[in-house]
Image 1: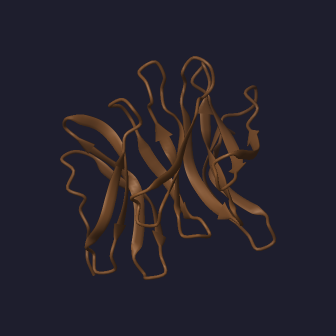
Image 2: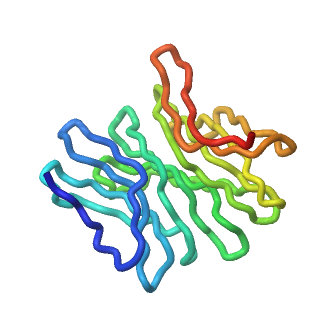
Length: 193
């Protein structure tokens, strides 16, 4: 048994974990240091508890960047989903990225702007479905109401289809997604009653 502390001087949180074929762990979340706001963090921890590699993800300005979900691609690449702040005129934007299995090579990075007025668009969960990925999260409108979204994107980060909550309807956020053997998806989150 072991416990791993990331060593950040302020907040650090792990949000997602995968186990690879060697029983090592790929972990994602964020770290927060005194000289910067939160940066996304992705790393591999060996089954012995030792850090194998890690990568920080900075969205472009020193504001909120977090990785909330990770999935393995069929070839072993790691696809991460979360949110980043690419400039000071917007809140967070949906961020997703594909990296090599060793974390060193970024294959691609995608950003998606939220609704008008620079409001957040945040990814919370991801699931690998064949060669594609299903991502879930929320967008916030000008009245600060949150509306879920569910998107399928291919292995290159291109949209296949997307579904979003009705802005006039109840608020809601999807936080996690998994698939069943019959192709159905199971979503969890919250919805205004």
